[in-house]
Length: 371
Image (cartoon, rainbow, N blue to C red; front, side, top):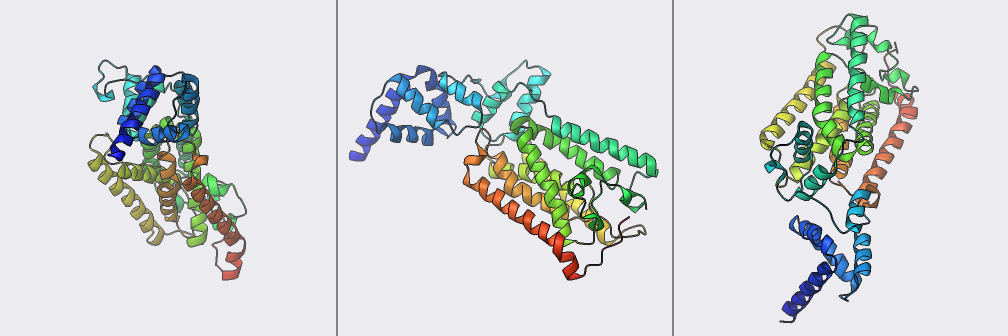
């Protein structure tokens, strides 16, 4: 009886609080329907100690509860007492322009929660556009065309004796050239590798950048690239590295892991079939890289590029990338799990740096002569 009375009293207090801000009532009820309002209202109730307060005090309390949100536009909407969102499901909206249809498609492909999808759909203005993945892909294509024309070879370019002379390729004999740990992502072994990576960057990377922004997706991509080259320098010490597979697999594995963990909330069509197809394609690319590494079809002057960058990128995506994709409209620096991943990544980078400085000489690794 006492518990029931307490719940009735709490519901009455919440109703009074919501009535104090008519404009915020709709947004809070929508958050409740999306499963996110319980913790929010609990914080409001605890902070106010179940005491009635005037409109300004309650509004200030709500703003404090929303202070962890990443988007300033969300906080402004709460402070203004409204958060305009479409009432109908986005898939039911007829007569949309191509641009709005694209935004709606991206919302349902990337975001697992309806409240986030509606908020993104109503607020996205295309500024800034997804320039990082687009420009990066264009640069990779241009560089590949230049080397293809120069070497007169478009498939298995790594077998050409002049290919490894590029200042962009990571080679264990040039470990002192720090930029090579990043710039190898601009070089590709052949048309098949470039086509696979470019396709995934445009089909997955661009939508992710549209939703999560250039800073987060750029950080995840470059973290996968760096982890790929460092992992090769530790685990496959005689092999070079080419291709953007470290960054691509970081994006893809993070997205796939996010879809799996939010399976019920994702509304992308044919998600099971597409998940199986993506895993088959990614596994096939890894298998192709393993085959080229240990069973080269053509004679070569040295070891072929390693496949470990693929696996390192996937690990970065499942760990660090998953936290980024699950934190839409949330501050990363206020999450303990984010700092754990950053600390772990920093320790790995430091270990790899010391390994590259000392381990090659201590272990007596026979490095192929640098071109």
